[in-house]
Image (cartoon, rainbow, N blue to C red; front, side):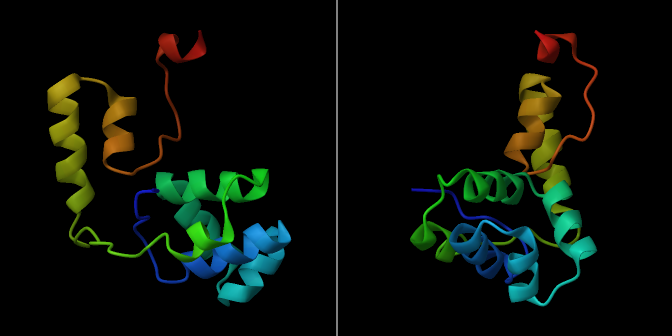
Length: 116
């Protein structure tokens, strides 16, 4: 079973439409959100970015897309992700793993190991 995806309540609508149509513009229209809002969410929400990719690849089902936020406890808006990130980073000293555990996207990495 997929882990719940944190974020706005429009995410399941976007993903379900994307699974059905495989068209990003149709999914954006279904959510009544601006492209900037949706792309910003993808840029900062690793779980959403992964589900988006799966929807386009055809590996995300409609039922999974509908249920991506069931039983979700959203992190507090006061930066709850920071505590998760810093705690994971303290445990393993791995920025990439800490970012994944805190559900944040890495936009840049200079780790030579990632290039191998």
